[in-house]
Amino acid sequence: MENAVEFKMLEKPNIKGYTLIEGFPGIGLIGTIAVGYLADKLNARCIGYILSKSFPPMASIHKGKPVLPARIYVDDKHKLVLLFSELVVPSSVVYDISEGILKWAEKNKIKRIISLAGMTARLGMENKKPEVYGIASNDKIAKELVDKNVKLITEGVTTGVSGILMARCRIDRFPAMSLLIESMRGYPDPGAAADLLEKLENFVGFDIKTKDLVEEARQIEAKMKRLLSNVGTSKKQYERAERHSLMYG
Figure 1: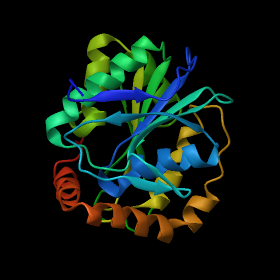
Figure 2 (figure 1 turned 90 degrees about the vertical axis):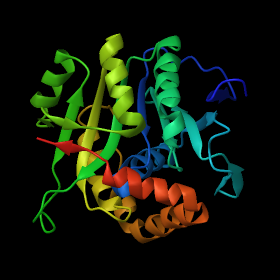
Figure 3 (figure 1 turned 45 degrees about the vertical axis):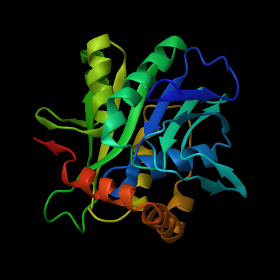
């Protein structure tokens, strides 16, 4: 691997005009849970992996088969590319992965990118439905978010792969949005991930049933905690990512 990050493709699909939905670990592990659930429920096929020597030495076991933690799936029926990671990306390769995703999307003529993530919950919201906020790479997408009742984040800081990716999309004038849902710190939040997927339906043409995600919450929470605990460095990076995650206003 000459570069810090490599996109290892198992096939060369025709994905021109598809929407890329991505999710990386952060607050509540929202992105990882939501996009992973989509890949499973849409019966998407794995078309590639993201590799780096900087990643922790680990593999996931999915449906009885070993798979690398950062994977790319495609769903031709709904014209979706689903990209997610089950490991926290080391800070040393965040820029490389963000740059790689954008270049890969441009090369394959992806129509737009949608990032899914969690954000710090407001105080006192424990018994309230979490709000969904948005970040847009251009004014047209900002209007779409507002028209679909997503509150725009006008001031703040966003970090990690999704944050840098959004900034790069802005610079390259690539259509992209980030949907972020309030989530509690310190543990995986499948319930918030389910709420975010319901909001995502307003932007993508599918009808995904999130009932299973809520019912499987304990299993998913246990799985994600196990993944983090298996790699001590990733767990520390996840906790650090939470501390430095989105602040908004």
